[in-house]
Image (cartoon, rainbow, N blue to C red; front, side, top):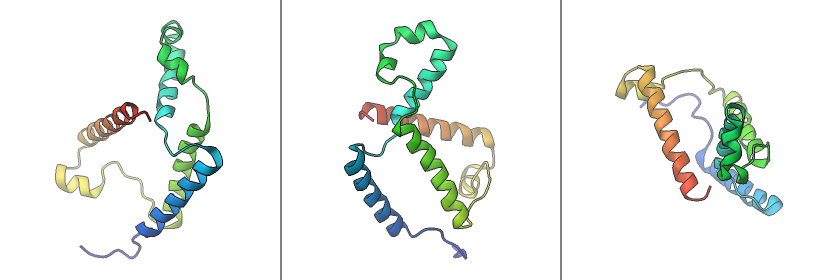
Length: 132
């Protein structure tokens, strides 16, 4: 494999900084990183808009009333932070199908989208089973 001119961030430094940030966040707020509850809030927001009567009858949504809380801001921060990191490291690129995926499974978008959705769904279910 040919070495690129810019291999991005040092994974050891990024991991160490993430660890320090997790400790600082837990100390300052009492909350650990995590955002699975935000997805439940998003689903609740959609459900309340589409079927308010059904939404009112689902007690699960009462625990996760739709609102923008620290987890929502966490998701926004992760999104903007990763964009900033990609821009600073000059590694940002638009693309539907990554080269590694295309070399193994072909350039088809539907298969890539289905695999991404399935993987995200499995992660979300696992996070919910584990309590967040």
